[in-house]
Length: 171
Image (cartoon, rainbow, N blue to C red; front, top):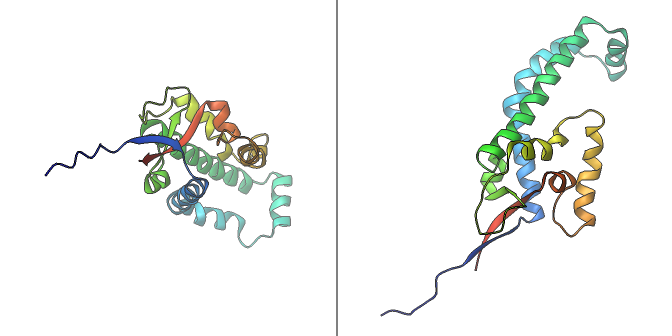
């Protein structure tokens, strides 16, 4: 017996905020586990049991240990930026986003239900929040606030890069 039920319809819509936050937390856990943990021994050997004040003095005195720390932190930052940028460029999503089935897409493309990943420059621009130095550190505050005070469901860097995070909804 044929019930003549119409096929399901799907569309891409803005990803829910809780999925986006959880995906970011999962990605940060992955970065901590695979990237930062590789440098923990080096950092603890260089800093020892130094307090923040002693580390500041090391920076101020420009000791050789600081050069090692700067190199280690630079590598960590580059690898973290590469993680977000390359996965979003090549696959349209990071590992955390894969677990929650959300995608990064070019918001300028017509919404035909496709999940085409953005271009490389867009992925780099949208992930500048990873860099923890001025002026990029100001993005940490402005980026989420922009999303809260606009109707676009986009962070500031997403708006600037013309990208958005979407999920597939089934009707």
